[in-house]
Length: 568
Image (cartoon, rainbow, N blue to C red; front, top):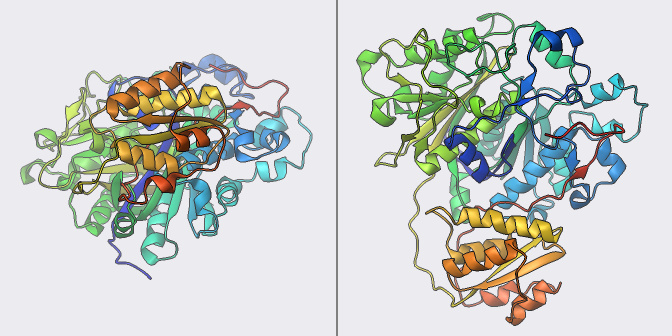
């Protein structure tokens, strides 16, 4: 059954991986601390980069530390098949698994469901690397280098039967995919959708041409909206969102990160030329997308800009926003009456096809933290940017963005190299009354992973979760880990009676000091038995599921080359 065209769509699960961050917590730490994880590029990472181009520029990028690493055993993929898989396919599988786990769901419990998978993609150069290195053809490379498998591999892995497709609109691909997912959810084409976009580098042909075309920073150190910006810096990573209509999510007890109010896409026609965009196209898209949500530009508190660090692109985007917010018409909804314009590309680089989705993740985390983070590396905005008298701000320090009587709203821009534009509007999650629940004297918190080291890492990540003031209730943690995870070989069952007891038990696991529990149910599960969790809840109300960090992967090198690219 179709729903109204303005039906809010809940983000119930979320994951990301970037240079310097494996989890949502680590990503927010990086953004809120204004860290920049920029590296000189080892020669083999951009294999085939033109020597003269390399000599006349300063190749730098925001790189993952193990582009060749993949936990093939976890996903049941043969080593040879994994070696010939585009590493972007591998990253997409990891992000998808963690996004579903983050929703408090066991990914294997959704097998056979008509869940849609929509992937945004821009570049795929793994096959290009094979050709450049003179690698012979291999049957495993047949699915491994086809872009369709970026989505199809996920649908196959999870056993999902909904639409499965890849969308390429260059740097707006991730947001374009989000727009199609939202349309399908509102039309009733599927009950749930997973949207993801990875971005990894395997060869140097695109980079060579991007340098020659003037898109990349020749100095290797360009900050968006700064006076010295001179091009963009490439970034590796990706993001994934699990989506559901808000009403259904609330009825099903899904945890909600935030709400997608509207997504719009367009093309600038001939405005801006073949590889640029123009103010008029941006203005029209933002107005139309906000209007579809019943909002105006002044309802926005934060806008995650496309903000790549190119001189003309940044100036055009600011000019369009300034025209959307004439100073004479009053303030915007952000701190100090301004619309604050940010760019996480300063922290992690331009993730190209994944840039829009990682912008959504940053915006959601900013809403949750009540903070608009500064633009990393920006001490003062370029005074020549055409802000005029509009209430626009470029944050050079972190700004409090507390909740109020009206829901806070942010937005994200993503502009494709070929003129395809996307804009998304994100609203804070609805505040839900916390119902009183009968608490047990003790809860059993199960941890499992593929090795003892991975279990210890999971314990450390959960400890980070409980450092904040909005950590989940103990019964929600226990329920989620009992029912929303695959039971793996290496197990630890924690019998705890409160938050301090939990911290002590998690610390013991993290440090290798865990002792087998005396509780019979916990001990039986830890010894490899089938779970008996339902016996613990037969007379209790089920608590809400919690957003938690996912199962740590045990990555090993999977690369067709004789030697994998140098790690950082």
